[in-house]
Amino acid sequence: AQSVAQPEDQVNVAEGNPLTVKCTYSVSGNPYLFWYVQYPNRGLQFLLKYITGDNLVKGSYGFEAEFNKSQTSFHLKKPSALVSDSALYFCAVRDPMHNFNKFYFGSGTKLNVKP
Amino acid sequence: DADVTQTPRNRITKTGKRIMLECSQTKGHDRMYWYRQDPGLGLRLIYYSFDVKDINKGEISDGYSVSRQAQAKFSLSLESAIPNQTALYFCATSDDSGVGTDTQYFGPGTRLTVL
Figure 1 (spheres, helix red, strand yellow):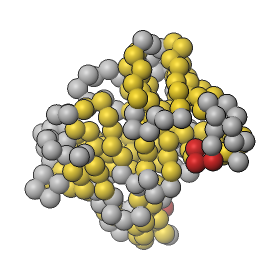
Figure 2 (cartoon, helix red, strand yellow):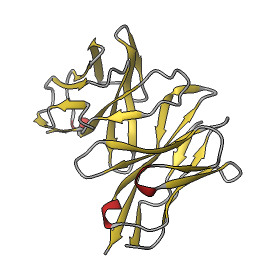
Figure 3 (tube, chains in turn red, blue):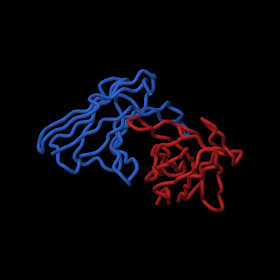
């Protein structure tokens, strides 16, 4: 069965420090992986995606994510957090081998960046 | 994303009432989706449509119906609302890459409360 897990409900980090939001997936084939961010009272916004190629993907607002096939992970990272990065982050996966039309979303991780 | 709009933004209704949530998009995308978001559960797919004549059930379609009135409009109906349908509902669109690499664009959401 396809699924995606975000093991941390909440991540707290001080402004200026590096941040990591974790995501692991369970897909039988090669996955398509996505990160979205949700600000309060807003819809989800696309940050970045991995389809194929370089394992390190760079996205919007200085975020990046690394695809690690052996660990089945796609952690979201940023070298220096900003208070404005505080939001809810969702990892999502698609399984192109079985049903590429469906997204499977993680439960979300709330990122708190403190001044 | 202002290109995807949802009405109403907030709605309180009573058990047994019929309610319709509307979604419009100006992105020119063929594909449209309805999701619900519950705390700790991420987003779950209710229905999706690849064009006006194509409607598909998602993970949790029971108790819901949809109508694709035009390329730009996709409505979600609750025929007889029940309290456990209280949630945040999102509409999304995507272009037709056909191979699962497309990015989804989300509306601002409708907060529905069923008393």
